[in-house]
Each structure stands twice: as C-alpha cells, then as structure tokens.
Length: 188
Image (cartoon, rainbow, N blue to C red; front, side, top):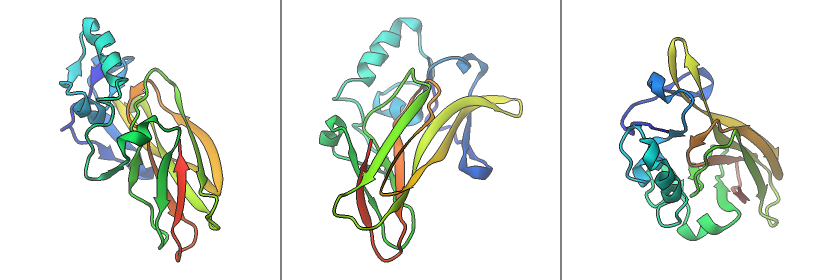
C-alpha cells in the first residue's frame, strides 16, 4: 500500500488526464489518493504491512470517510454517504457543474460503476462525466493517472470506468444540454 503525497503536483496532459509520478515501490501496490490520505490523516509513503488492516477499517468507517472537503470540490452531506445515490445539479448556461464528490472510497476493484438519472420532474437532458484511475507509465516515469470519462448523455445512463486498485473518492460532473435551464439529478 502506498500513500500519495498531498502536496505533489500532478501534470495535466492532452485529453484531460492528470499524471501523478510515484516511486517504483508503489508499482503493484494499493494507491491511496491525497484526498483520502488527508481525511484519514496518513503520512505519504509506503504503509507498513502491519498497519494495512487498520487502514482498511479506518477507510470504511462512517466517521472518517469524507469528513473533510476541498473548496474546489462540492461535497454532499454526511447523510448522503449512506444513501444509494448522491444528488447533482447540471447548471444552466451549458457549462459543467463543479466536481461532486461521493463520500465513499473504493479499493481493490478494477473498475467503478457510475449510474445516473435526471429527476422525474426534469424535462431536459444532461451530459455526464465521472473520474477513473489507472496506474502506468508516462515515458519512463511510473505513476497514477486520473482521467475524466464520459458516462453518457440523455435522461439516464450507466457505464464502468477503470479504477485500478485505488483508494479514492468517486467524483462526477454534469452539464445541461440546454443553455437556458438547469437540470437536477442523482448518481451512484
């Protein structure tokens, strides 16, 4: 298990993917993203094998999961963390919403399922995106890739994106397909 340094900058490359370089010892390990590491008060670097079980218990605790939010990310209420869905609002004007962070974390999965729908009262459609993660190389440097994936347009949709054994919060964005109306919805 390897905890990323929360202060290490990532490099955003063409196509919107962000690459975070990691040391060679992180290859093949569970990668903990900076957001989760901050919430769990973890120090950057390799986690001793004796502490891995404690980390999983802490990461799955409702008291710690998502307790701190970043100002650039729209966080939902702690009550929503126990709900099957998280609400979103696709703003009018055709621009993307802020990132909406689901207050859960994921690990030891190869892919993340995103399912979404607009509210039954909504008459307009949206386009949506969700983040995915994978580890790999950028030239000769090993690291973590964070990328936005299209999760569909319309009134509902679902898709799977890569999640490559990463402990991270799922984030989601939506935009209204009409410029003069915002659209409410929910995702999981």
